[in-house]
Length: 322
Length: 243
Image (tube, rainbow over all chains, first blue to last red; front, side, top):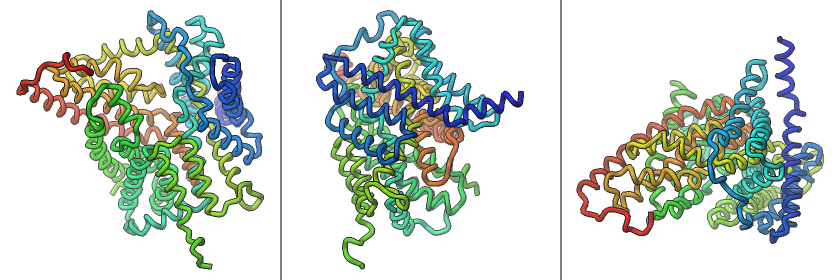
């Protein structure tokens, strides 16, 4: 039994497991590439095909490419996207939602994803492995199982699955690579020493020796910078490497996970209060047919202010008890 | 020595590029990329590094490849797309219609709680488009006794707010969400590796506080709208174009 458990833990932790998931994504993206290339109705099919091909290469073979080649590929991807190569085309949606909703059959595949995620995370925990790694592996397994459930229940072809996945990926649009790009930005800023520069600048304002004061400065920085950029992910990589780690976590030995996630949600408070986050705060104005452009923000900034104060309270209660 | 171009703060121009580019709504990818390249270039990083020093392209490629896990959800999109063709949105709508039908505040809090639950299960769905506009906004407007256009608009704005509250904070409860994975990636790069499951647990207090605060806000909004409805001589909604 103990052998079985350690086997599970080792399988989950093995690098090849995650590489397999990435290879699957690579294959999926190459499927999108072939589909885009064969779609004669699509005006810009070759740039789109090239985009999916290169992205698939990065996913499937990223671990074996020299880093500078991978970097070059990233630049090429951003270039193709900026030139409008993967913009969603107005091809008519095939059938769209089927006329009669088929109850639980539609829900089943989607529920497979969290089920597998939590099941494998739980298995990892029971077998003494890394739970987070288990959750990630579970997400990948869930995605595959869910397709396996959906295909027979709707009598879909593999082609339809590719089509559905590509459509959703294109719907998310240029945002789907953003988190990875932002992580790269954080690393570039660190390599360039921007983090320490920011830390020096903010460090002068933060009261020495006060963990709460430093945390307030970090949360405030996250909120303001997010409001400025309209994106808490972008702010997170910059402010956390520049302020959160050197001024809050490192000097006081605080729990990095708790401080970091509070930083991220302090950023979300900024998102709620800024017109810069247009897709969340301004898009609904048109979508819901409101006459006041700031109707949503006017409600949200009040909650954001109260919730921001709650961050300081949660910090003092859980991270730095008196 | 001491020349003006040696001023260390020139690197911060990258931040300026980032802020201006995002403010002007230039395409996000190129803005982020050029902010990084400007910063690294001003800091004197070579394009392709050697043994001693990482270059711009190396850093970019390394960060991208090592953070592929953030975009692992690409693997779940075909299944979600197929489920949508099987009528996922209609099913969700039916479930949500059963969940909430009484007062405006209950509709709003119920919607937010439902979005938190979806987020905790890692279901990436576009709430404004899929639920807010077609299902919850009409429910919210109907929950008011005599909705004038202005008050119905207030109620709908609150639906949009409930969607954002539930979505922003609820998604962190899922360990493999993009947010948790980004935090884990950045923290690993900063030398403080953290566990994504721990991250999702640490997100819980703020989720609970956000639900409580929103409940207070929505209850107050409902009281205010009802009072305005009792006093007003505004014509009832329905003849007012939008809605």
